[in-house]
Length: 231
View 1 (tube, rainbow, N blue to C red):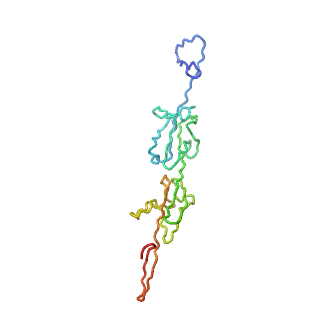
View 2 (tube, rainbow, N blue to C red):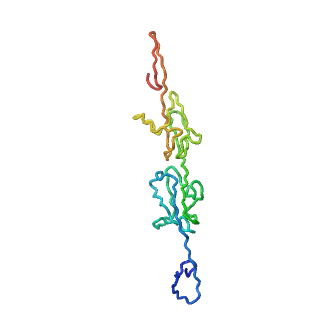
View 3 (cartoon, helix red, strand yellow):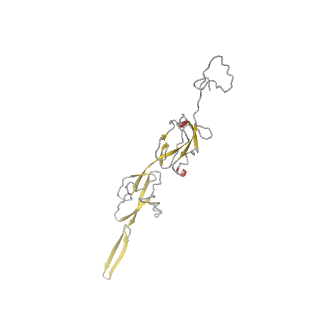
């Protein structure tokens, strides 16, 4: 009990001699019940950026206050809910449900009657894919969702053409004359997008084989040659 309506007056304890000389009104001061807020990042911890501070096991909120005033276990008030960073994804916020629920922000008022878990919601980033065909054919860029497959949404990887060659697939490394067998990783329609940045795929080609026949008075000789190579 306090002598002021705003709770900033003199606190009157039971049995206290107040020294009042006239009738005095006392005012009740209330404190909101405290509840624990836990966090589910909805992904593996290894997917979070190493530059982001660890998310606290839980925070303490008071009924009637806002989530932005939550305390961490040591009593510190960070001033905001944690905002995790996940490689390849954008953070959409904290929600009361794993796949739906109500969004909770720093300004949301705490109206809890029990402890609660908040779930992180994420949106996969769009990754821009460009193509180097090593030919005269130019292909438009393609956008894919991080974590999806390169051929998702009925958008298969393009198959370029080149005179004298058979397409051997898309790879992650450009052609290197010093190490021509180092292509990097083969990327196919069912390959998962694990590079969080825009990147280029490189076409690799196998020269076609042709049969050449030489004839003279003594008979004929057949020879297999590769396109572009000397006979």
